[in-house]
Image (cartoon, rainbow, N blue to C red; front, side, top):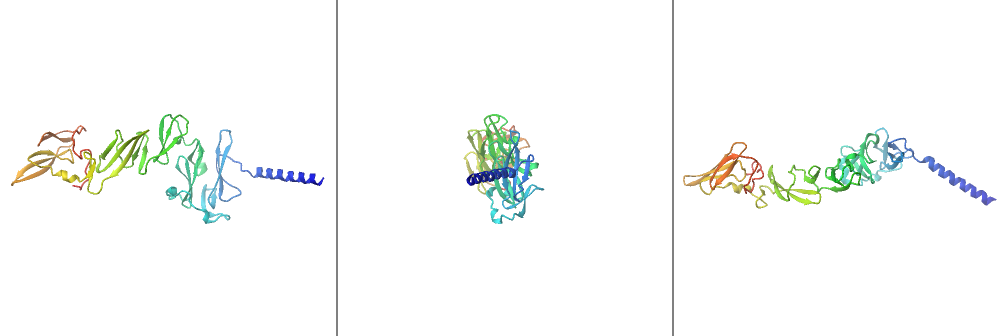
Length: 331
């Protein structure tokens, strides 16, 4: 009889434990970010699911207090945690917390950054969840199928990450899982050109090769064909040199200014609008530089002979710096 009573007592205690656990389970009052009633630094993210209920994600402020009014982690330490618990887990994202020392941000479509006293902690969003900045969460949160800019709404398409232009995604089908890619440092993804481009305002790639930057001969770039478009990389020549499109090397462009070998008129190899007149004076060969009118360029008719003609944008010359502009003061 005693054994039977003990068994019943144990069963009652276990049942009460289960009921207490159910009673203590957090219930979402709606969509949003809510404090944990039993922990000063913890909070719950409640996001809707297809069953009509909520998916619950628990996180904490790394030893600091969650402020319900501002929906941020403030600078008050929780009694059970110490400052030693506040160790950033992803240093590259700390720059995002410089202007938001306490808050929730989106680093990219799949990464939420929790800023605590200017230090960054990250949360990776699971499949079909994307980082979305929503007021009811006080900022960034992993949310189902939001924002649309991070999802595949068109087939065979490329989309740039709305939070990080260095990242982009490819979509095979509508609603498919985006495949993530990242451009090299110093480059961003050009959605219209479907290529990684330098941030230095370079023209889009159309053929493979290496080319001078039109606005500055001391800079050049390469175009490499890849599976889904072009990879563009930018380079800079050493001081006092410029990219020679004929030789493919960085050279001193100023040596090309000494064009007079005999009398006549010859093109300025650094600027197609200019030309040199070479003439003998006092037994020495002199050169003077002249400029054609605006929207005109110098055209060579024969060695030492030429004229100013309208410039229609076509330049068939083999001048080493005809495709770019020599920086002022270099020569």
